[in-house]
Length: 148
Image 1 (cartoon, rainbow, N blue to C red):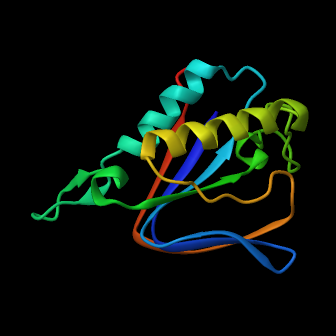
Image 2 (cartoon, rainbow, N blue to C red; image 1 turned 90 degrees about the vertical axis):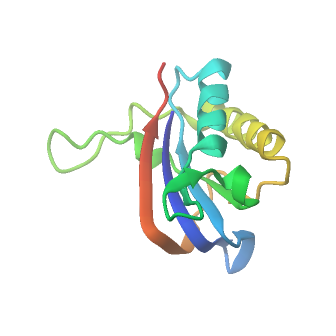
């Protein structure tokens, strides 16, 4: 599993002209899944996402998590995060889980994040052509790979 985590002032995802998820201050998490991802990997990534200390404290140091700040998390599936573009000019997506495997992982991950965060987690629509807009705060962007 791979996450691209962006600290945002606001973010939203739109499908066919309809907003399917939006947040104010918090994190936009783009999530890609591999066929070998396990529940243990999802749990580790969920906790890391919710507890990652990338928000400023009273001294301007990044010592607070999205949970500490009461912020929100928007999760958007993005299989292209697992692309391999090291050879040639056309990326290979063989490392990405196929939709029948990835969609249940995505749904499980979103449910885990909502439980860990203690609030609903807005999302895009799995497999849809989505338009994502955001106001990056910082900017702060972290790429996180699961340990397994």
